[in-house]
Image (cartoon, rainbow, N blue to C red; front, side):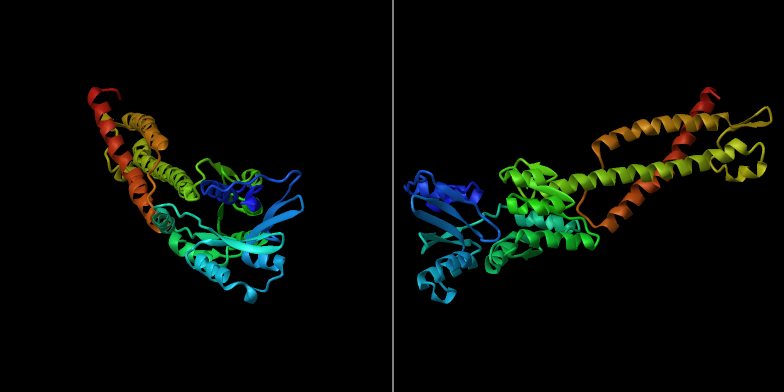
Length: 349
């Protein structure tokens, strides 16, 4: 407990809370000095009144106490192996340079997280867990969470290097983190999401802060971003197709009097003959009215957005072209013809 009193990370606070639940008490010595965690030493702790308490990665604490891994007490060695294989993180504890025990620290994988990572996979996104844990623990957690890959015993430099390598391949990278060691990677990533419960350095380095401290929130971020892109693409596709079809519909009617050959292209029969002369006014007015109505009709779609479905980019493009591309071509022919008939019937043109 003493080794965690000055540790303000979620892990440190959880150890202190658990110790208090078990009836243990601890007060930092007067003039005590906290020893912050470092990615280099992988150890944190507390010094005060001639005493020192340390906790950290097992190999780092063994090195601190001068014990070779092969000489580690069998009880502690078995406990470390059991904790790692169960997906937990073993933290060795030393007091005054003497190894005294091991802490079993377990990351709780939230219910449904495996399914949510599967959703990311269907979106075409690859998930990588980056952790400072040993490879055995990392492999167990990665399997339980359902991520695609993992990087174990990662230093801040390793995290930064991995992100830069992925970006060098032309990929966009989103990073979720909560520790000071995550800050460089959060700043380098295209989208850095810091946890609200994380350190100040992480929150300042990220592009956004997740108030729920839920790493899977990146799924919702991706969904919102993709919905915005899809909506913009759908509206653009519809508008281009609509303009092409609209002008193809009315241009032959507008110039058929000057170029009678264009009459063959006036497939909708827009306009009408008045006193033996072809009059295109109804076609032009119909196009103007249709254009005003279609803009109003698209406002709800723009505000609501096109619903995103976790399917591949190819299927999304195909769906976009079939619905909004084909719809943009068909709508002007039907709409302008109906308006033209109404205008001609009531005698507006």
